Image (cartoon, rainbow, N blue to C red):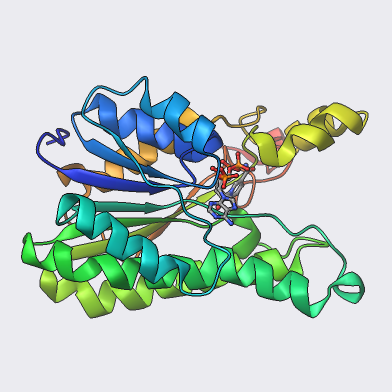
Length: 262
Ligand SMILES: NC(=O)c1ccc[n+]([C@@H]2O[C@H](COP(=O)([O-])OP(=O)(O)OC[C@H]3O[C@@H](n4cnc5c(N)ncnc54)[C@H](OP(=O)(O)O)[C@@H]3O)[C@@H](O)[C@H]2O)c1
């Protein structure tokens, strides 16, 4: 069943990009969406186009206690939630030698600590409602060994590991926990590089089997799969959604000589 009528879904980082696309997709199948992020104008712009009584709750997830405080504010507003999309995240493109303690703390605070504390803060309400679905947005960076990304890759590997551990802890309560590892998605994270580095778009495209960058909708459709009963027997999984970047031959050329194929 792919209908979310009567369900409440929280989307972090809903002000743009993958989070915005996810909020729109969950609303389109009947869910009431709580949109959170720091940029109130953008959150309200997105909410203004949703149908099912969306709610905007701004929060900066870099701050200590932010995940727990956000959970409390959400529960004061709606009482309980069924779906949590932990999408908010920041990149950290820096060689290991250039990383400061502050860089590492910041990227782990947003991408890991707040994701976990928000999940913990909302889990009891899901249990009271008979279960729920938590969808964590990780990255192919946590699956491969990307250059100049050690801190970011570490956060995303942690997200996938926590996904499996929470699936174990909360499976008996009916809460499913899965992660989506996007590949190259043309959002604000890439905007400056795409606009300023000559040849980048084509060079990266060449590494993708499907020969195109992804868009927010490519991920949002997988978010709805994990949010609905369509994935009712799936938990603790990481689904790589990258057009064949991480695990398919980079060139997508035939992998054996044609002469060798019977
Ligand atoms: N785009 C890609 O190629 C790609 C690939 C793999 C994984 N991902 C992951 O996908 C997720 C979404 O990324 P995106 O590509 O959609 O990037 P984006 O367009 O930059 O969106 C990031 C979202 O996170 C929110 N955010 C950032 N810092 C925050 C903070 N301190 N507190 C609260 N919210 C914060 C932003 O909202 P505000 O600025 O309004 O706070 C924004 O809504 C991230 O976790 C990212 O790591 C993206």
